[in-house]
Amino acid sequence: MVQEIVSGTAWRWPDSAFWRDIELQTPPCFHPWPNRADSLLWLSSLNGEFSVASAYSSLKPSRRKVPWSDIIWGPSHIPRFSFIVWLTLKERLTTKMYLRSRGLGIDNRCVLCSDGEEDDEHLFFKCPFSQRIWIILLDRCGVARNLVVWKDVVGWMSRRV
Ligand SMILES: [Zn+2]
Image 1 (tube, rainbow, N blue to C red):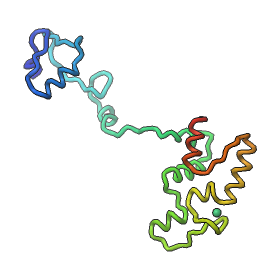
Image 2: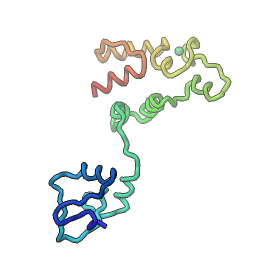
Image 3: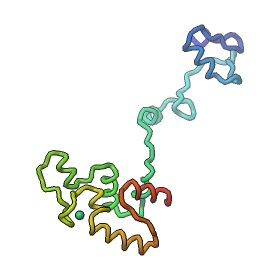
Image 4: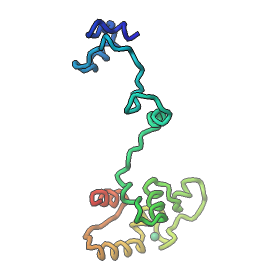
């Protein structure tokens, strides 16, 4: 099979669009070795040998690290708080508005102030109780910044980590 595309130390590509693409992708320094036996190489491993582990890692989707990963996960972080922030960033925090969007006929007023609609932005930033906490916290940290939505907070913290 390989011998069909080899002529001595040169390639003999069949005339088709598929092989033209292969020819274009083949580095000029890559020549056939006519005196060497053909062998199978598993391209998903470093040594060219097949292993179940290399097959598994080639099949599983690559995990892209989200920019906020280092902000919420780490050995010094409090797991319960990390989990709450993770749920919020994944838009899965079970606020009253979230539960209403799932069909629960419940009162959607904020449990803290009984004024605004309880969604994640209100709970963490727009609620007067949360705003007071932010003001104190940012003041103690010496940060002169108004944080009003999760995207701003995550973007700002991602640049600082
Ligand atoms: Zn509130």
